[in-house]
Image (cartoon, rainbow, N blue to C red; front, side):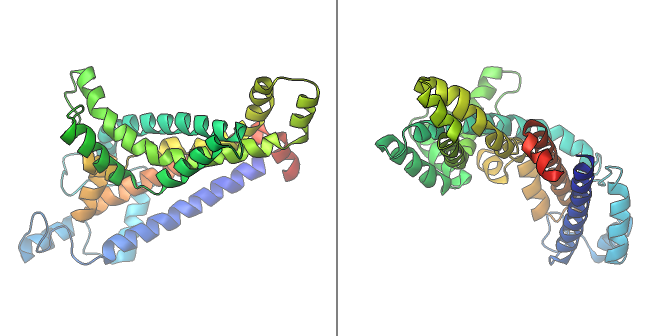
Length: 316
């Protein structure tokens, strides 16, 4: 297990290094710049040259990357061009709770609804319930979250006027914030339920075809007991290792959902930084997301090895 852990950590380090190099070079090769003509705050040539010298953008690309990499190893991603009074790390810390709340609620709803539907489909294989759930899972997976957001806003905000169309609401009024969260959470969660439902059905169907399930039925165990004690319990291992990464992936923010509903999260700032060529903020948000996802998969694999002894046996 120690050798496996060290190997995975080394792979994560190499992946993050390559991702940082690719993102750095791609951001620099895009035409234009943060202070070029047509930017949000256009400047004269003299002012542009002064700011490029201040932020080290007048140096060769390889030198800029080495300086950035040295600082990034200490989690210093620089200061955004648009808000230089605070660092990129401070900005991420300020807006992350908004994305984490929306994404965490959406991931919880997606997993709860998806597992429930997948369990129903697996328990009633080849029935009309299975057909409905499978059709729903395939159809809902093809709908982008921002399209789902516009559909929900059109019906429930514009037509019926039951819920607010966007924004965060009044932070001092929890009920008002909760009302503003309903549509973005549902729009974010529904497309994800399709994949969760399909994977749940597949895992449970494989478990139901196992010998120990047939043995349980032969012993006279009731169907509910078989599903709860044997099928669901053994199907949980691949389900947990697949669904757990949903949380950091959705909690780091969706640029589409946050843009549609005007939420002040990481996704919104990532779009703004990409549009304004804010290199430090683009790199900072990208690397923060990549580190979080990589560590989640790493701990998930370690947890898988601790839960299932067959993984350790195979390794030896």
